[in-house]
Image (cartoon, rainbow, N blue to C red; front, top):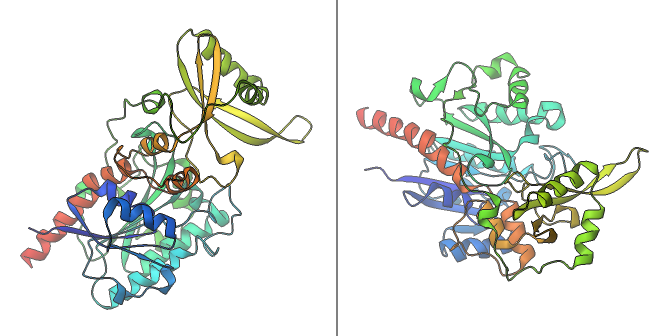
Length: 382
């Protein structure tokens, strides 16, 4: 029986590996961050991850022949919250290092059957769509057909985390009609994705495939279900600190808080501080809260506004504190035995950069495994 194998680039703590599960074998992993390497080895052991810049790797560094190459390449230059340097930026430009490795493998007859790229949905509109077209052109030039899905992790875990997943399959692999559609489905085709597809040159669209992946059953898990009563890595805010957050709310967010207080129930919400423009056009910092059972999208803790707060209302009182590291891991869909960095900021950085394992698991079950099973059967019959 063929055992599924993969490479994991920009591996972080190995969250794609966590999603793929034990039926997949990691042949090689790579990341340039030493702290993330420590987290990776704490969870997966020594030997699989090579520390270093992807541009310094060659195909000779990659053992065997992988069925899948996963790449959650850096998003900072593509994110709407970033400097928007684009795909040619210093960080997001690491995609081209990945492309060069795949090209080297192809020259040796070892091109992975599937490439999976994960990034922020801002990749669709970066440089007015030119970056997404460049990415798709690179995949075509490597000899792949491709398609994309916009998937929010909120369909699997209690965290709003929309991400773009570009899945490419070697063009020589026959695709089952059950895995592709002649039109976009309603589940994972966002308006931005539809516009990006329409803006492609006609010759590039010929390599596009609309992947047929079923919608998940949905998650019954809510934010309140992952919250710890007294986490060890963060302290509850003082009453003055909590009131400071409340004072930063506008009328809309104050109304959400008041509704939670008046419900008479214990309610848990998530809060971010944002810079907004007031009625005079002046920049002011606002506290924006939600009580819809979801946390906001986890971010790397690069500044105060990127840190997410928990707001608890009960008995007419309001309490607040930062989200803990373990709570953040649960929001990503990681088990409680997943080893986190000891430093709070390192744990949040690792998780904020990661991919939600349940989304990877869904893609593996409903797309990767059927594609690879078909390809293996075709190879055996040849």
